[in-house]
Image 1 (cartoon, rainbow, N blue to C red):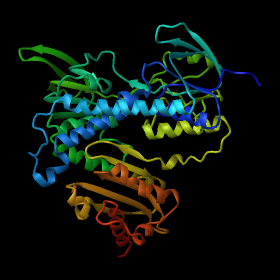
Image 2: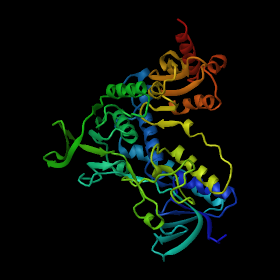
Image 3: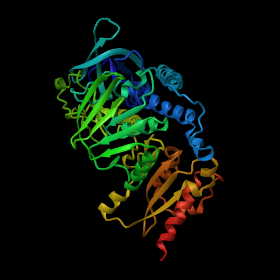
Image 4: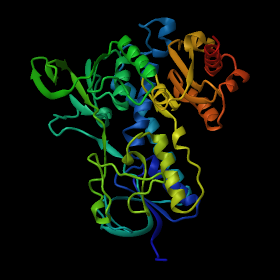
Amino acid sequence: MAEFDYDLAVIGSGPAGHHAAIQAAKLRKRAIIVERNPIIGGVCVNTGTIPSKTMREAVLYLSGYREHAIYGESYRVKDRITLQDLLFRVEGVVRHEIDVARHQLQRNGVEVACAEASFIDPHTLRLTMTDGGARRTITAAHIAIAVGTAPAVDSAMPLDGRNVFTSDDILKLTELPRTLTVIGAGVIGCEYASMFAALDVRVTLIDSRARLLPFVDAEIAETLAYHLREKRVTLRLGERVTGVELLNGAGGSHVEVKLASGKRIATETALCSMGRAGATARLELAAVGIETDRRGRIAVNEFFQTAVPHIYAAGDVTGFPSLASTSAEQGRVAACHAFGAGVSHARELLPYGIYTIPELSFVGRNEEELSEAGVPYEIGKARYGEIARGNIAGASFGLLKLLFHRENRELLGVHALGEGACELVHIGQAVLALGGTIDYFINTVFNYPTLAECYKTAAFDGINRLVS
């Protein structure tokens, strides 16, 4: 066997790259992470998941959102909320997460190189040091591509980082806008639209698709749409943007968004959220025979191997679902497979968490999938308003929906919308993984008062539907 400098070289330090390197180190392998930015963590820690979810938490607190059901819509912790108020919380959390990630790599003996990597051949990488140092060449028995993504934007879009910006520019804004138009109602677009709406920014959300989040259970997506409208968000679904123009007037600069239907939307700011593209342009993938799709994403098999078996790709660069949790698991699985370590990976039971306001989460199959497959199923629902904890916490708006087989009562899917949905879904995830039935929730005692009681209420609702 040829001698290599490393057993595993990982390109990118986001969740996929981080967990791949840590897993390799746990298997007593020599691992290195190559990160082109001066700080580790990738998009997840620096501009994506951690900042956006921290900002969301600051929005919920400062706007008094969680208390509105009790004290009224006018209740706020702070009357005039500034972007600096939101970023104050973000900066501290980001610093802490970077420190935690760096310490994990240090104590596991993972080397970190601040450099931009590109392929020379299937086992060799050229590292261009970002601190101005000389180039370096390394070899590795296995390589994992975990470079993540960057916003996908139209070259004609007049991005200035202030009036017209991408989600990566949010942290650079100096003040909250009065009006915002979000172009693209994917996960990121919906999350930011709901956050700004909670701050009483007048939001317009545009998407060419007929409904929000097509991969989400239709009833849950429709309920989210209803709630957004209640927060004065204007939904322009089934509409295509034909142009965005930055204009200057007596009152300052503003934006005009033009739609194919002839509509024109005047707005102070526009957030371009039209998906993301794999950050693969500089990797020189052609040198090793790996191709990408039109959005720079890399195709992989169930073990996250590329067309070159010893080269893996994990995380957002492989496409949907592009979640930090799934990316971390993909990196771990890739490293385990590379070094022949046994790994159990239930891909069909990965939970999805979307941090809109209110948040939504699901695991397993939805109604549309079950209907298409011809599976005889029934539903059981519980609304937060009928649960004591929901009313105590002021979270009366919420829904837990269980899908189960009509004949053997096996649990098939769990869908939640409301406060704590991304935590609540894990109870159902465990029952799904163990092949449990709807009867588990009926026969289980949950703490009172808790949102977990939704499972018992939904289970009884479902069983009652089976009785004529």
